[in-house]
Length: 382
Image (cartoon, rainbow, N blue to C red; front, side, top):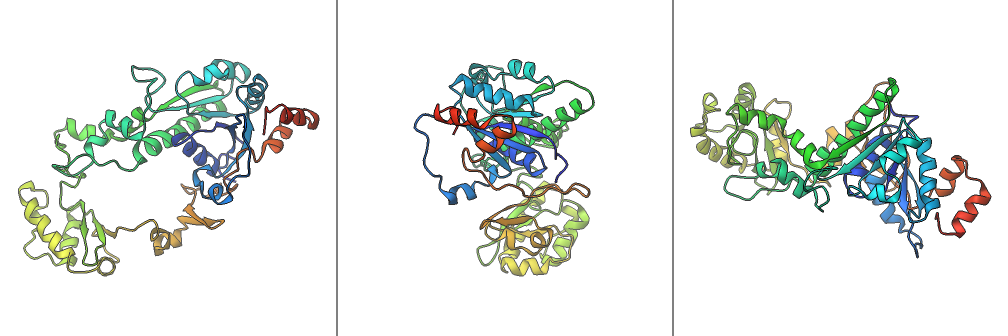
């Protein structure tokens, strides 16, 4: 059932990091109820294939509510009265204008953990401005640190802002606040901002910079492709392998298995030797295919791995044995993580169609059949 079984989370429908946090909490066993906005003229059957492929929406139930109607807002407040947590990812002030701000919700339920996901945060000069992952990680120093020397920064997909520094930290913060409530504390607001979160993910590098171990030019340092023993190399078939033997013993094993003539393990950390070492590694890896190199380094600590595509990753033997990926309704997707020995997380509900659980959720919340019929007729729910 997962370690969060028994907890109820209400999620205001959104995009990006908020839904990712909801997916993580649902994977860990929480009952996540998503509030989808019901707008005038809404209707029509959803595309089943599109619903199945919406992996980040897995694990919840969906209730469609017209939040412009006061009765719709009251329904959400009724659900929050019996919930443990709320996730919302609107711009600052939107929930307050809807009548669902923290003061109102915490008055209704003093034990509620109110999770807020934004890019810039709830305050500050940029708080009310639009933005996306790429903008938020620009201000934290994360984006400016990713890329090769002499080339523009490379956006690391939207993993650092939306998901690592956003959704995962929101989920972590909410679990911490829920633990506080379980220990006798009160409900509270969790203000998660992607700029703050991506800055936190850079903690090691700010520390290395302070110690004089990280230079200001990207692509010249230990972990940003500056060091030739922490980089990606092309293979004979057009594939790539990742190379990362930071420790001297592992680096020596790399050179031994690679047969890199003229390379000296003793000079691993001498930047003056890096250009020549990089050329030797480049030339060596270009002599065999990616799969051949995987076989050469099998069973070694040289820290070499094939760079797989999303099509290939689920089929790799290690991932297959671990069950790192699962297939549901024909959609290959990552399995819940991390692993728990006593309360294993599991893939439960598939992604919901908008409003697919309206009757089920509201009935369980005490809405009578007659009232539910009236709410549907008046366009408050769908």
